[in-house]
Image (tube, rainbow, N blue to C red; front, side, top):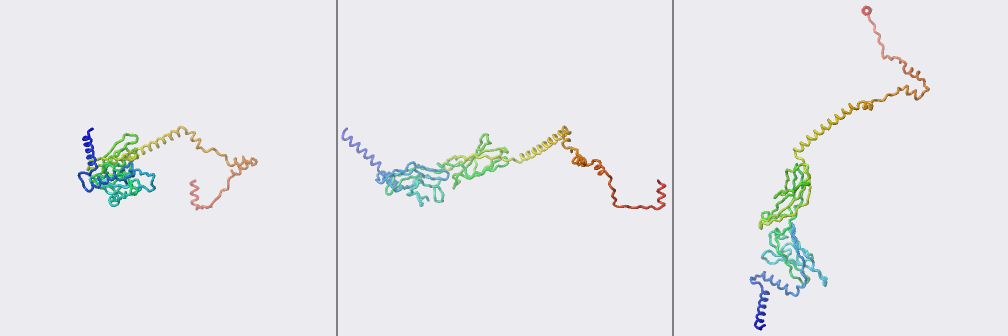
Length: 356
């Protein structure tokens, strides 16, 4: 190879290396600081710690949690701490501390950072584009930054099932009340709608919805039938026309009650059934009495009894039976309570005799 050609290639490679190491053309204070930090992380001799592995962001309902695997060092007794930073679209990096986001994730020993909006000042806005980065630190040493893909809560959230589900059986209906999977501050930009999956036990599943209300009534159900159901929420974000279908709730089954017409039919059926049963029982009893009249008379007839005198004689045969009977059958003296003597005049006596 000619020397001139060799020197040309070396010069061209030097130009490319200088361009790669140069700061961005559109240089601002923030981008320059970021470029300096990235460049320092590449060439900084203090960047000797291994970076945290397998970071992941959990977005479930209102939860916003960043977690990672711990960095293990065999030659150090001091604990490794971690630092988390965040930024919004086209903004600079901010420390995840009390002043910026209401959550302290600066030099923490835990392997997660919870941004959930448990307080008014905590948590990221659910419609903001958020990017997170993480590094490990040990004294003056630190690891390279690990940057996660950006996310928007409404775009990437996993929606759980509705909560606090209560079902009240009605007259041929089921009334379902529940609460939303999580609260939405501005319902003009995002809101929930709900679907009910229900079926008669052993039957075909049906879906009713969407509903905006947290109280749903399933009508026109068969009375005294067992129905099973599941409730599902769906998040709608108007800004980006995004739909996030939520998880189904656990299966629960309930028995419907009778409506007014069914109750009237039951009363009529019970009355007719009772009257028919009593009639059948009365007819059966009358038939049995006629058929088994002699046997029934024999069962209910009083058996003959021995006279008291004969019974006493049988107990004591030495007793003269005739005297005992004569004694018992002797006429008793009449007992008079009072005696009245009636006298008539002689004339009336003669009239009476003539009449006789």
